[in-house]
Length: 259
Image 1 (cartoon, one colour):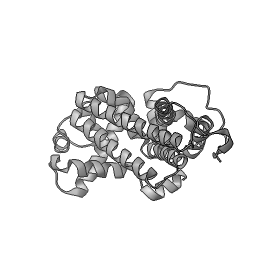
Image 2 (cartoon, helix red, strand yellow):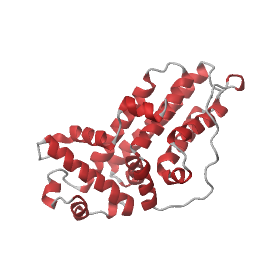
Image 3 (cartoon, rainbow, N blue to C red):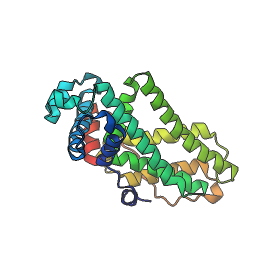
């Protein structure tokens, strides 16, 4: 599956995420006209991701949101009770949407190798479609309260288990070499996180999400598939750029340019 095919199937975008957040939190929102709510929530959430990329969520104030969105403080409080409430709305429902798409993407695949490939591509493609949210989630989840941190940890462990379980099933079926599935799952997650946390690197060298997915799968297959049954048909990808660095602002800007 290519990124274009993935998008044709799932129609994933920031707008869809915002709609999901609205549906999950409509009872908390004082404004009841859906069109108005969605329009203003889009302004609020876009402002959250923009300002957070520039100076961090902890440094933001409701007045910052007011200036960025053009909404009065009173209007803002009719949508969110506090910054903490806003953070939980964005992160909590985003996790639900991401996990549901991952599960749907691999549900039709019975073959272990096909399931692993589908899971890797789906994770990369979701993070491409929602790159600003993924970057925001990665940077801000550790600053949440205890309950929020526990939810984030549970989500992280869930995706680790998803990859590890696919690898275990593949080893049982003889499709994969007997590698440590838990450590392998963590290594796969690190490769996937590289795409949305350091998106600017790939933007500078013109590496597309399809090309990076091919590289990651070729890398994984070389480690896990028996040599006699290497089923990867993916082309090699040029090495990643050696130059490192970049600010929170640069990462955010690259994400918005390439999401």
